[in-house]
Amino acid sequence: MERLEAFEKMLSEIIKQAEFETEQLELLKSAGKEKSATYRQYLGNRMFYKMMLEKYKEYGLI
Image (cartoon, rainbow, N blue to C red; front, side):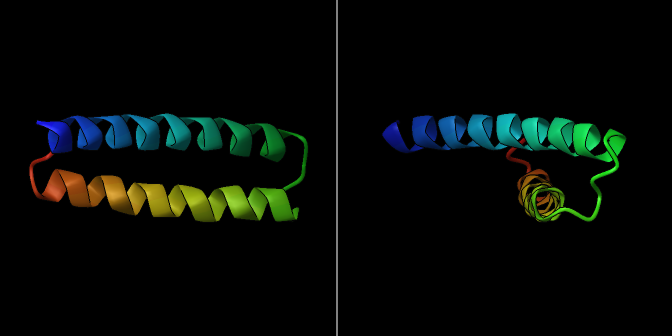
């Protein structure tokens, strides 16, 4: 049961972080900072989180 709880906690954190970084990307984009290092880092992170969430969906975990 601990393993399932740990997975659920991790999944929740990934979803929350992905949403936060998407919001930050929008803020940076509206400020015209698409070429900043911060924007690019958030973009890379968003792509990573998206890939992870797609894998979870592929295996029926979410």
